[in-house]
Image (cartoon, rainbow, N blue to C red; front, top):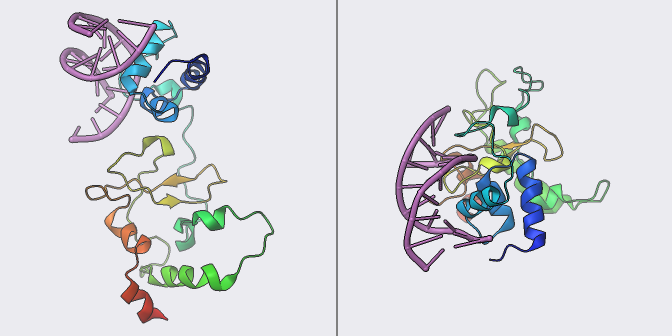
Length: 178
DNA sequence: CCCTGATTCGC
DNA sequence: GCGAATCAGG
């Protein structure tokens, strides 16, 4: 890949926004994080305050610790086709609701009611996802508390073992539910 | 082991 | 100039 003016500009922008080299490399495409870092140095762009890990300056504030609205539905992922629906658009209920309700019913409801059984999500940003992190979305993408499950997923699976079951429902199992 | 940026050095 | 390999750190 070539460092066109356009790409360099994007690099500068993203770097100044605090994105990591690997993230920038991913967005530019066709380059490694090393390439990005090397370019940054050659451009004499200001490096990160302190090397290693996450620059503390890049994480301005910690959201409130208390979870505002704990519920089983808080963790319900929104399928892309639903999320992409224009506000107010009419959606064919037969198309999506059936599957959804099935999923929701399948969620184990804990005796104490309030906590989702999916133990913990490592509140990962889109930025932190790797080949081995669960990419199950949690929350409303339009909300700033949106994040990903991030738990370890087997081998090359995009989801952890728990979310795998929601993502890939065996056809036999689906038939059983109809 | 996952990640981060920094540096080196052959190309 | 480029970036893989390496280093150093969380």
